[in-house]
Amino acid sequence: MKRKFVKYYTIKYFGEDIDIIESKYAYGDRIALQAILHSTGEPYAVLTTNVSAYDRDYPDKKCVILDVNNCPDIDKVLLKAGLIGECLGRVQSGFCSYPVHKYLG
View 1 (cartoon, helix red, strand yellow):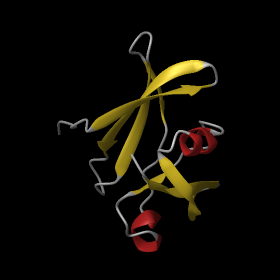
View 2: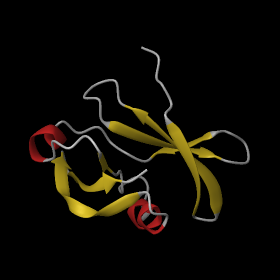
View 3: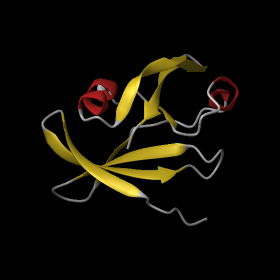
View 4: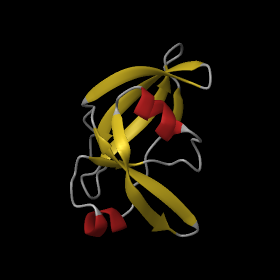
């Protein structure tokens, strides 16, 4: 399946300029955010995770589940950039707990 990139934004994260690319996960039609290094175009990180518990607890498709385990403080950076709203709650997946935010991008 071919992914369609919808939008992108540039932010600063740990001293790096990164482009945030918004697309959709193939399963569940949830918002996916990927970080690409602005200077080289190389992949930096996937900022979201695709957790099925989201559908039950947060049926609004304009929310994102942020992978703060692999991208520490990304929630604070995106909040400051105005791309997400305050935390709505958390979803559990295995041993990890992920914050859910309203996506404003």
